[in-house]
Image (tube, rainbow, N blue to C red):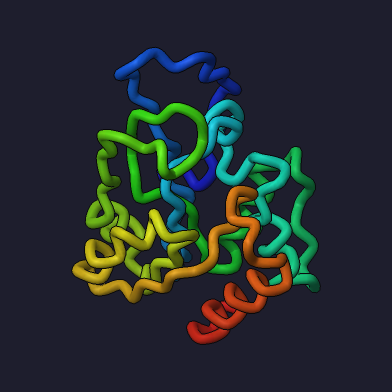
Length: 183
């Protein structure tokens, strides 16, 4: 399993009706203790083949704020940012492997296929915790709990989830990670 796949930049273009989008590979390895689970990558993330690539998504700024003493590699160094996250015991993935969707909103997801959590659990044996990045992801908490993982619902880092201020999201994420000795 590649921790940060070097994939070509692709442009998803205009999706034809019934066309399926394919998600991104998991960013995880034997050090992964907690897995951040989103729902499905947005259009910008699919285009760049990078988790949380939309410039207004607060995921990467939140991660930097959680570990301010460890400077995160710059935005253009995606592989470096993934390695930085893995060093802290965190992995990235989504609950959906593929789906039909027009736009980037979770509410537009149709005909979704769930990722193989059991397979990832075998490849990341130290995995103990699923950090659900938003409500759509948390709908699948039962599936990860059935594998012996604890599931925690966190406020979405998406720009579409603007009802929480950055500081509120940061505190919720910090509390969840601190409860599991990850910060």
